[in-house]
Length: 260
Length: 348
Image 1 (spheres, each protein chain N blue to C red):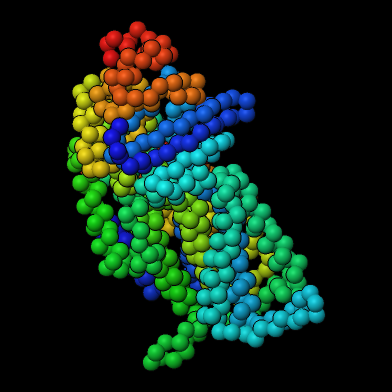
Image 2: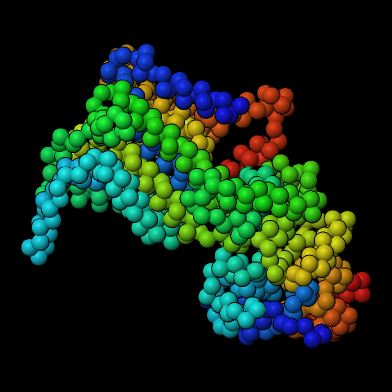
């Protein structure tokens, strides 16, 4: 880690559901412009951690700060307003709308006009609408879904729906993107394209936190990896360090470690 | 193409009083038109945000009472020996106040009940309508209770160059309702096609995702509730000044059910749906009356409703539009197939 300024800080976060401990004591940071992966076996608490960071779940203890602002207690849409945007494992699109309309919905944060202006169709509202349409087309082009722009998002393949999900998240103009298992359900070539996409997102100065099971993908794309098991962090470091960490190999990678 | 259909429909509706001289039928058209406006406002909530308000008639009734009381004047005692006296205002002021008060009620009901969604929202709205009905029934000093408010003045417009025009004839009232309905239609159309409408649709389809891209649930839903209630209040005001007598029966549950039937049969979430469904189920009783015994009329009414929902389950307008598109493109539209499939999985 170089002297990057810190974007996201997770401090001693714990989440308990009744007697079940989902996260016991988690602290780590993500630097500006970094790609960090959060990995761990199923049930290790990765998605729970995401839900805490994005306000969908309130932690039992500890706090999350993003660019100096405390996130604990904020509603999800308020956290989105701070530029912290996430994607979801499964429910990643608005199924009944076309891909194009999905992006227009995703551009909500950019399209805020006064209600009366919108109803009366005043020039300001119309100009804003034109900008949104322009931006939606750009985003579709950027994820390479031009041909599906006017199909219902629910009729797309899983891989394509993932791309829509990422485009939707980007539409919200994030300064940091949290991706929850973005390549699950993608084939090798789709995954390869997706890695390129993540890199170009980062090159735009967007910080990325990734939860993913696809080890080769994680090892290729990450600057740093945080390994979670049974709700606690068992290792943290560069892909090379993680690959050779005995605790990680035992807990998670098992005999697959050599291949990764 | 769509614009052409709309203009033709409006022209057809505008021409009706020119060839239809039967006052009974014209009266049926006016009251149906008023209920169509109510149905359009319900559709904004039910069709575009997915929230079922089963107390929607409350906003309609509040609009009717506010409008009537403003234009009739009242003199009531309040706790602490205070008397609240209000001299009659022109009916048009009553209408504006009706829209305002109904909208405010929509705000409070929305704020209260959108914290608890789905079935809870349905219960809260039913309770709200029932409470308002009981107030109208029992606050006799203000509302005359079951004795009804009578002699409500007709709406008078002051037109530049013509002077005051009191809308007494059926033809005048027909055009008034048509104009208000058009304004409501355009308002809703503009709203649902703006970014507010997209926020509503996003919330209906995938709330978690909508929230994650920065859409504020409470604000969006409350806004829809306010506009919906305000339009219902406008319809109620039209009703009060046209019928010129209102009693607490205006809050009856069956009136909400009628509006729900209009929306669902016509096609919720389609702009023209409540208009088509509203005209059918508003005029059906009138059409059945001369040909059937009263008992048989209601059976036929139910039969028509079931038949429509059986043949066109998504409502008349969306189903027919889909067939039309399919025939033109020559092949079943994949997108719309997926649309019905995912629609079925949608949690209530």
